[in-house]
Image 1 (cartoon, rainbow, N blue to C red):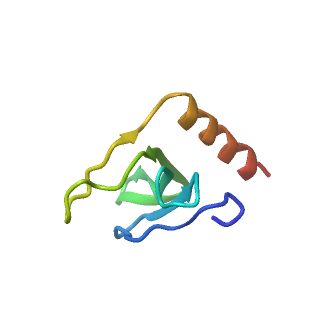
Image 2 (cartoon, rainbow, N blue to C red):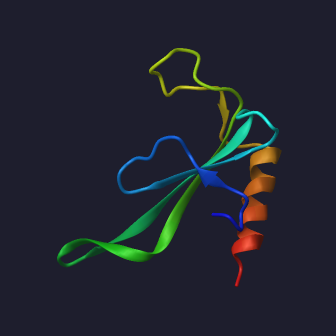
Amino acid sequence: MRRLGYQPAYFQKAGEVSIVRPLARQDYPRFHLYIKPSFAKASEGLVKGNDYVFSLHLDQKKPSYEGQTGHSGDYDGEVVENEAERIKNLLEI
């Protein structure tokens, strides 16, 4: 997380890690990355795998209404693709 320049998000869901990387001195805009373990089908059901699933988006602003999680976010496009590539390069061993 630190090597990527990210910090823990204000909230966490069970079973996944939520981290953010602000693009400016303010909280927004920021990249928001969810990381959770992958699961594989096995004879005994779903089994936790050795890989992780990354879900990245760009939060443009904080939620408009108190208590809401919806926000103005970009899930694709050049900026998000460039950040995904940056993360991949930093995680290469």
